[in-house]
Image (tube, rainbow, N blue to C red; front, side, top):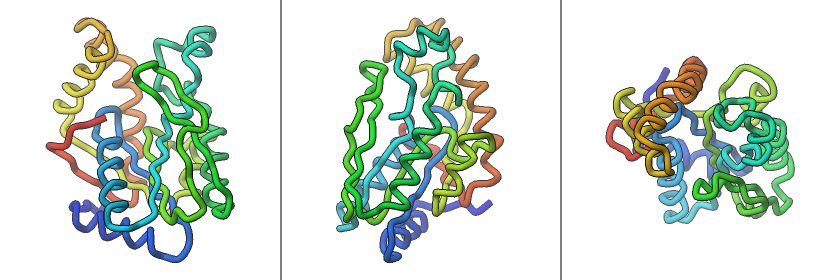
Amino acid sequence: MRILDPVTAYDRAVGLATRGRRSILGITGAPAAGKSTYAEQLTAQLTADGHRVTLVPMDGYHLAQSVLEAEGLAEVKGAPHTFDGYGFVALLRRLKESPEEPIWAPRFDRSIEDSIAASIGIAPEVTLVLTEGNYLLLDQMPWATVRTLLDECWYVEVPEQLRHERLEARHRLYGRSPEEAHERTYGTDERNARLIAATATVADATIQLDRTPGR
């Protein structure tokens, strides 16, 4: 698998943004690998250079917290079946096949642990949509359809110790005790991370972010 340095990655993103039709670039990786931060930074850089780019994270398709609690899924939030995967696929298909439409996507608000509908606008003028999330390369339905709608998908990785440290710190930041943060990091999150890591070989390229703050 090809490893992209930041300059080469940026040039490839510019190529996608200027090919004459709307493209979708996926950024994937395990929890706390840095994919959200990287996608935000790449979007900001492309926008500053005059490209029409919008970031649409997969996290907007988390099932509502009330639904997770009612279904007994709150403790495994973040697993593939705790997302509206078919809804996410439908959004990507609209973005790809109906670029002339103004489209609105949901946004996940971590401060309330819930999604807010129609929070991200994608105007017809947008030539590149970045989407980031855990399961963009997962080979099970409905996620397997995602890959067919992406022009490229890059896998973000960092050393595992750093990723675990970030993840525990994130859990503590949002109210979990040190013990709960550790249990979540090496329990549910680690099972998800292994599932995601198995998809790395089918990515178009790898981005290594040893020092980038991660989400």
